[in-house]
Image (cartoon, rainbow, N blue to C red; front, side, top):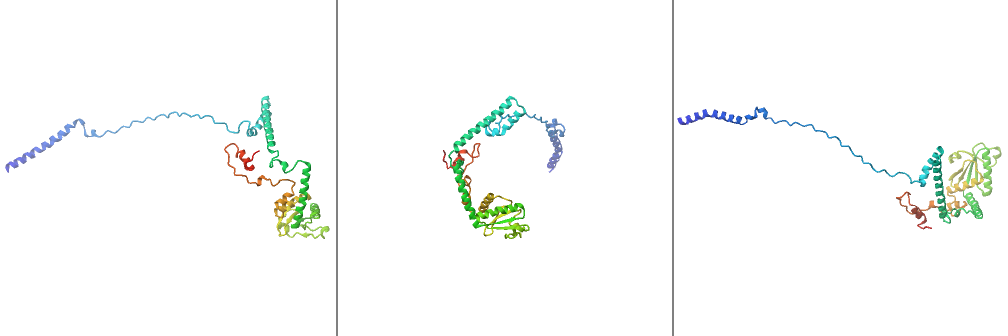
Length: 315
């Protein structure tokens, strides 16, 4: 037991020295590092970043675009620019300015003559383009056409008089009295039934002619001025054909138009009173074939216009 105590006491005495030596060994091994705060990691020093100068941008020069507008000396170009050349020649009449305008003028006239010649080539004898197919140039043919139209005119107006009547609104003015005389001539030729309505006190000379006083009929029909003539169907449907003095020939034309609007006469009967041949050959009433849009300067190619109306037949 005594040996064990002696050994323990010896160990207790030796331990502090061992601990001190261990500490010294660790410090001596790192004594070159200096004080402990010298071991802190060094902060990174940011170096200033040099900004790069912007590089000069190279400009891309595009080739000049083609001049806009119509081609020189084309019809559109002449139409847009001829006045400018005329103004220049007037304001500064140098030989060059005057000659430039005269050249353009002559060029335009020659183009017009060429078009006129081509138009004559296309028109002559064409069933649609040649106007003599509708109204002949020969005097004897014109006279015959006029006579037929006049005869048809009398027949159609007589038909109108048998299917409709007239309301005549008037006052005691000179214009109204003159218009009444025109209506009397119409009645003698075509036996129209006319109801005379006065919008003013009836003159003494007309009191025995069956004239009626206007009791609002004119306002109901839309009459605003007199003398006025209204065409009336038997069922009461009416059409104002005049609100001012008209001659006998003008009155007959208005009767035809009013009767057509009221469907008292047909389209063919109306056309028969006109001194024109082949009036049914009307391109506006035709139904041309489907037309496709064009990619050239014209909205629609010229050949497509011709084919649409001629059915593809060319001359």
